Length: 592
Image (cartoon, rainbow, N blue to C red; front, side):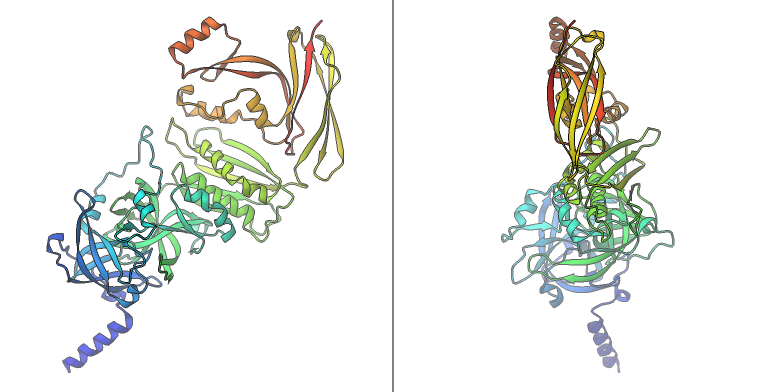
């Protein structure tokens, strides 16, 4: 009878492949590295499908001491389970706990080779993961540079598949709410930040509902978990495995997410749809669910967070033309100077390019508003002749957002970012055909007439006339009448593209400089004088005497700058609502 019971239990276990009810306890004892012996049989717990974890068999090969740095070893195991041996360790299994004789040993974290006939995997010792839960949670101070994620040399070499190479599983961030076409457009921008992304991912929550309320889920070692960079209508998240649970304290992944250090990354529920096997790199396909907490540490040995502690996020809202069935997209992004602009631009690209109803073929105006606490908002407007023009300018959109959101003076983030997309009645492109000035010489008090002939896109010719009374202070000057776009006028008048830290005193001055940018649509009609500009921080002096200039530049060459530029004596923004590529000049001499 006893043999029959044992046989039934063995058949049930083999049929189910190890179900959650048989999972190791959250408080399992730890087996020290010193007690590990080659040939020991172990089991690794992870989720193959859904949310219930299962085990698969491994055999301990040995310990590679100091493989990850002084005192940081790597446990090497052969993947003996037929299900895993055929496809190798899978991206998304990161953090799967390894048990030997019911004791916790380490977590799956490193890929060992790729194409060999016998599959191996590397495991981070669990003691190394316990270290990160004790690190301080404070984010970097304003004086501390934020880490910018990059691909390491080791990762780059490992991608060649050379024998003996190993690399931590690169988190695969799945984009949900984003079409494959948009994912392809944004892939180079996200890759430049060290993000490996795929379009095959889903989300189970949207908008404000993506943030959970208690009761919290009962996570166990081996459960699936997601670390999200964005949640809501647009989701960007990497799924992995829970390594250890201590009350509401969670350890996962067994390797870095992006090596952000002390951070605020949403912890989210997830479910596994399936595993896509590959000889190169197998991966789990997942759906990301509600936010249930925050990861506060992203370190060499893994990530650490707490259930119930909500992260600080920046809301992003995109309002679309009223005729569309869906009038807005809403999502929230982590507070990071490099990632926030890229992910916000991804959502914006989805709104413009990724909808059945989009069809903004003629053109549209994009208005961006960045709301800061206790400060006036930043607002910028840009015309686009159509979706393709926007797609080609995505890098420029990201660069603008990075400039608005990143500053060297104060580590602050906006309370909200708002994009408004409005259709234009026709294609907003114009062509200047002629610029005429009624006379080339004029006296103070006289009136000159400036005429502009231009065409719209596939439209008739238009004619605009502007009158200007010559002021007395222009007497005796050789001037130019200029018609140019805003960016061209910025360059002509010597506005610097970048500012050094010592040119401004604080974040408010930085915002003031950003607000002085000329409009990008329409043209600027100006009367300019050529002169030498001497700049003290942001204060400009025209034709400063040479003796003063030499003294100032000798004391601080970085602060004081001299350059030749055009000084506007008169300026007017004309022909708004169209994009022009024009830079025309006419001479004008003022004499009695």
